[in-house]
Amino acid sequence: MYQWSEEHQAIIDVMRRFVDDEIRPHLDDLEHHGLPPYEVLRTMYQTFGLRAMAQENFQRQLERKRLGDEAPAPKRGGGDPALTLIPTIELCRVSPGLVTSLGVSTGLAAGTINKLGTPAQMERWALDLMTLDKIGAWAITEPDSGSDALGGMRTSARRDGDEYVLNGQKTWITNGPYADTIVLYAKLDDGSDTPWRDRKVLTFVLDTGMGGLEQAKPMRKMGQHASPTGEVFLSDVRVGRDRLLGETEEPRGGGRQSAKDNFVAERAGVAAMALGIIEECCRLAVAYAKERKLWGTPIGEYQLVQLMLANMEVARLNVRNMVFAHVERSLDGVTPSFAEASAMKLYAAQAACQVADDAIQIFGGNGYIAEYRVEQLSRDARVLRIYAGTDEMQVIAIAKDLIRS
Image (spheres, rainbow, N blue to C red):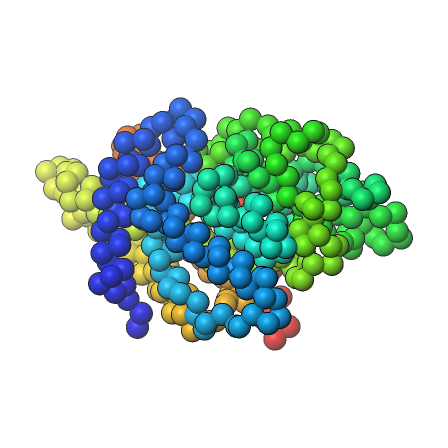
């Protein structure tokens, strides 16, 4: 069975020292005083050489894009996915919002540009996002089209000579208030008889400060305060074809398929985020159960507390094994299906919320106080059951796959 190697464990140990030295001291500012997370993340990139790794990864992707059909197939497995998941897990032990902001900028925004864009577009936007020199947002969700993001999308792109005119509104956009670069999805408004739900979905790249583009201030949220979220408004934003990814309305993969592929990666990644939250809640709860005394006895000696601790450990093992299985399959070049990724997210997100809630219960009144950390982890965990598709949408995806197989 897959386990962390000695090399992996060494990385984990170094990451935990970094978290203790560079992130925990800033938690109050990130949580309660509106400190944007980007300088903390850039410090991490410099400390661990991630910026140089991102540059090398970009050059490989750019070369494959330039070669096109003549490019050799990437090696099976394509590297060690654990090197990406370990930072995710360790950061989520202290501040899941950092992972959300990082993943959207370097994963969703840069990843979409690298997949759909031309070499020139990759060089223009993607490299700066991958290295965190600039911050990216991925704008697909709208006020009336969350779970039905593609079908219910109302943001439009109307042809006007050699340009497009964009109008609409996006909401719950991670990094939206501070993003330098926004990857935006819009429906093609070509005046045809095609039903609006079935219109082409085009993907554009916008830069902050463009005429007609408004990035609203950060929203006040229940959790993940370290990840700024906001609305994006478009009022007659004019863009040239150079900002249409692929510079064609028929790019390989297309806007719809690109969004679906991103959902698969995002949902699998939520399991790693959940594992970090679960591991930290378990650690904190066990330590507290040993120290806190009731009637002269550590509360960990009472069976009802033991039951909660045991259930928390079962959840930890289950989610860890899901993450390990994902790493092992990725090493063999196997990508999870849409339904498999949905199943991972559904179980892991629910487990993280339950474990965090049990941790608060074990802490009692202290669990309701921010100082003891489980309060923040519980708030941060809750959105895992909502973003990247709600629990209910995961159930639909899984069930459809079972019925059709």
